[in-house]
Image 1 (cartoon, helix red, strand yellow):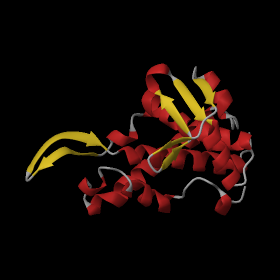
Image 2: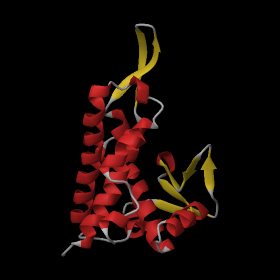
Image 3: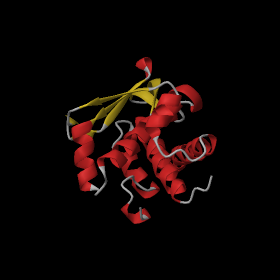
Length: 183
């Protein structure tokens, strides 16, 4: 698959992803590039590690089984607000749910076989599994005040978009590296 046709964002679009986060306004401008780069690198390094550890395995379905993850397919288009969701990782249940109608629309839009699209989406959720079980939550690597009232700041919360940026980097890197993989 040519890189310019790859359906997962490049790092340049990661900044846009960050801007969608509810905490975006709380992140100082001078920190934004640094935290995007850090999240991207975490996803990239995880992809390199998993690819090497599993000897170039192409199927995230096989990796999920090896790791004890359950994969459930639901025949639904999951749209909440203005966002379409393709999958969910349920950490407490060690389960990934794939929303097949959402994935089918994405596959069609990106000229992908449904099996390829499902594998890529599963790869995205596999990164979230790694966050919970092996590498730590990317969203917690940069904290902002949960509540600000004037100059008073209360509590801290992570930036969820950083986890999504890491997952995009993971999938993009994994499949780019697979193109040149020699076991």
